[in-house]
Image 1: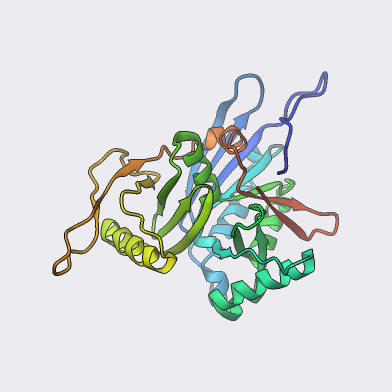
Image 2: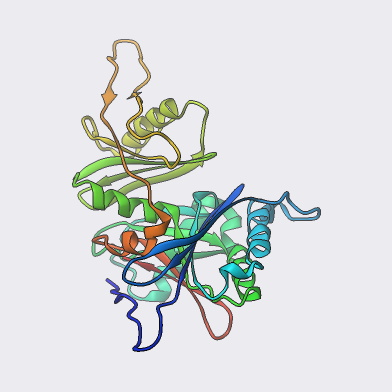
Length: 315
């Protein structure tokens, strides 16, 4: 486990403001937070992303409008002088569960197995991704993430052009799961993270990740979640009858009626599932909410002296 002490001001020096950004393919949300004993929002901006540029490759088309918009917005001097913290929508991140193997004795072997696992799951496109894996302990599957290296490089360039150092990047899933740990004490549950156009569903049992899947969101979210739960339960070989579904859906009215049940098949009664709503992350409290979790499942991005990106999964 990596521990980080809170930033403490040096005598005579004020604490640096924080710039919190949520990046979605179609929209950016930016907050500048005044640091001190009482943090407060200095400015907030919600910006629609530019249209894609002609000649953009298919791989870049999914994220280039957002990164281009970020670069444009950061020219505004009102954001300068702050320390950036970026939350990436799951549209930009791919996940995989990496099984534990006793035979993997060193870092190089684990990295080779990690890359092999991603290529099996996602094909040759994973060759151009920056892959990182959490350390979930002995005999436990690890959660791993893949982000296009080109995306990370362009994000870094956007910050550098504005005179800002790229400090931290958090995948939305990891930030959201920390909200679950702070708000519930369930030992076993399904977790659904819904974003505009994207759905991520995970199965967690006694602190172990059993499944994590992302896909395009269907119009019938409830039906889609029910189908995924039924399918993944069979694949994992786990009877999850009675396990609650924890919903994390920013922008949706928490507590609104939502029924998750399996498709009614002949000679099979419907199986209704308890739904609980998780309060979404407040970007103004990003650092406190992330770091107060029992385990920090987040990607920390550091810009090294060579300008390459070094990513580490905190666990």
